[in-house]
Structure formats: C-alpha cells, structure tokens
Length: 466
Ligand code: GLU
Image (cartoon, rainbow, N blue to C red; front, side):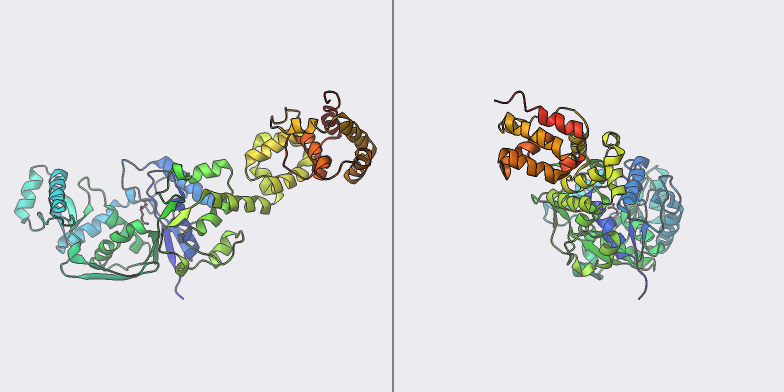
C-alpha cells in the first residue's frame, strides 16, 4: 500500500476550537505522515500569536507533525504568506496559457451584479465581463492605475466528478461555476488557489476537512488539472454542532482548546471526545493516540452533523483522571495545591484525587479540607454532624485515642460505645471531618488526616451540641 500523507492547514486568525481540532485530529489519525501548513494569506486577520497558540495546542494534544513549522517564526516552506514566488510561477503559467485573466471589476460592480442575479432567481456567479479584454484594454486599465484580480477561466461544459471518502460520489457541472479569483487585487493568493497548489506540491494524498469546503473542491480540482498537478483524495467531514443543534458557540459549551487546557482537561480526554465526534469506535474505553489511530477508519465517519455535548467531554475527563499515573496527576495539580500537601501524604492524596475529582479545582478543595485548618465549607454538613450529639463525638474521641492508626478498631470501638450503625455512624463522622456529605471513604479520610487535626475536628462537636 502506498503511504498516505495528510495535512492540517489552519488559518491563524483565531484560537483553535473544537471544530478545527477535530479536523486536525482526523488528519493526524489517518495519515502515515501528517504535515502542518499555516494558511496566513489573510494578512490583516492572521496573527503570529495565533500561530504560537496553534502549535502549542497541537503539541499539547499530542498531534505531532512530521513536516511543518517549529515555532511561530514564519519560514518560507510552511507559511503561505512566504510562498508568493511559488504561486507567481503558476499564475504566470495560467495567464500565458489563457487559463486565467485579469479582472478589473470593482467590488461594487460585482455586488450589483450579484444582487441582480439573485433577484432574478439565478445563482450568483461572475458574469465574465473581463473574460475577453484585449491586451490593449488590459494595458490601458493598468495605466489608469486599476489593480486587477486574477480569475481562473473555468472551462465550459465539463463535469467534475470525484469520490468523496465520506460523502460518496460527487458531481458538479463546470457551467455552474463562475470564473473565480485566484489572486486578489493586492497580489495575495486566494484560498482556492494556494490551498490546492500547496496540497499538490507538498505531496498531500488525502485532504480531510470540514464539509463547508465541499463546494470549493471542484474549483480546486479544475485548477490542479489545468496545471497538471496531482489531485489528492478528499474526505469532507460532517459539521459539528452543539448539543442544542445550533452552531458551536460559548452558549452551547464550546470553548477554545487553550481554555480547555487551562481548565485542566487532559489531552487524552479531549482526544477521546474529538475522535468520536462524527467517527464511531467499537470500544467505549479511553484510548491513547496510538490505539485511536489503529482503529481509525474513514468509512466510520458519518455524513450527518455530529453533536458536541460538554457532558461527553467530562465523561472522558473522568476516565482520564482515573487512569492517570501519580506523576501525571501531580503535575496536573495546581502549584498552590501541591504546596499544601505534605510529601509523605502525596501518594495517598493522589489516590483520593483519582477517585473523587475531575478537575484540579476539586483537588484543591480536597487538599484544603484535608491538610489545612481553613474553615470547612458552609454546606449543611457541619449542622448535620451536630445532630449526632455530644455523646457520639465524645465516644468518637475515645475510640480514636484507643484505636490509634487502625480505622477498623476505631469503628469497632465507636459502634460498641454508641450502638450507631450504617448511615447514622458514617454520616456524622464524614460531615465532622470534612464538612461535606460526599467524598473519599471514611477509612481513607481517617488514615490521611493528621491525628491532631482528626481529634480537633471530632472535639469541635463536643461542647456546643445539645
Ligand atoms: N485554511 C483553511 C481553513 O482553515 C483550510 C481548509 C482546508 O483544510 O482545505 O479553513
């Protein structure tokens, strides 16, 4: 089998979000090699900071590109803004062969023509006004100082067909496609053009991208054919919507990858969620990149829009926390959390984190509850503990003194002293020790709490109770 090369070709005009992260992931999962190209031809909206953020997000997700930029420094090979001379050669070739022509129509003229077409129920496409200007007319207009765009001359009466690897057979008539701009009036390369040229020149075999680009594909194929450049195969993935069916936005829980990273999501949680957006896996288990790659199959990509549900992401995060090793979890904790966990209690604390927390914020709350004397949360738990009464806590103190390190002994003692059992035994203890109704098992709490602190917390309920 010949080897496959895929690419991710973001425009650095904003932060990476769930939609483009999904495209990047599918490309990385599918390709034997995966390249990164920065499509920064929109000089006004492209920003170096966004390139830096993109690289950081991709690295954090573990989507490693074999070819592409190392950092945000624009280098000729991977930044379209630096590849003008390459595109120029092809513009020239197309012009010389009469396959492209300068167009002097102003944006206003084009807009009027568009409105007229729409008004008469026709799909808007370029009227062809400048398609047959004579060489003299072109020179005259240039002398007048008019800067033309360059339009690709779409051949008449052709059918453009291809097999989309997600959507199946596609067929377009060239007569439905107006001559389109391949170079802007400011000399910058237009997306249709440089995106296709670069795929060909960079040896990309498979273009995996969003469905919103499907209608661009016949145009790009026409350009590549005209220049006798190799055509990639195309796979247009379904769009991703929010779980309310609306486009992704803050309102339906969509956030940038940077924000998710800062909120403490694990990259593996995100990878597992993204890999299942529009793609099905047989296994519901948390998989690492290699396992996701091994089971990835383009034929498992769905045609209908995928829905992003923030609860799914949290589900994967839950599994990721449970699967994380101590070293990973320790790094994941906030620095201020690490600072309050005594070294000798760290392993025990990480076990608590693993089974009780999903976010670093929650780990921080537990660290404060267990290792500081900051007031325990004002939920009704302390109040509920008080209901158990002073004798209960006096007995608990005695039991703790007698039992020392042994939780089992502590419980046996307390049961025999108070006659309490089940919830009546556990709830007041848990509430008194943590200020909460939920959390780690009582035995775990008993063992991890410093003995003085444990005694103090039990003693708190021996004076004020009824
Ligand atoms: N720069 C384009 C985008 O971000 C790339 C589209 C493509 O993948 O071909 O939408």
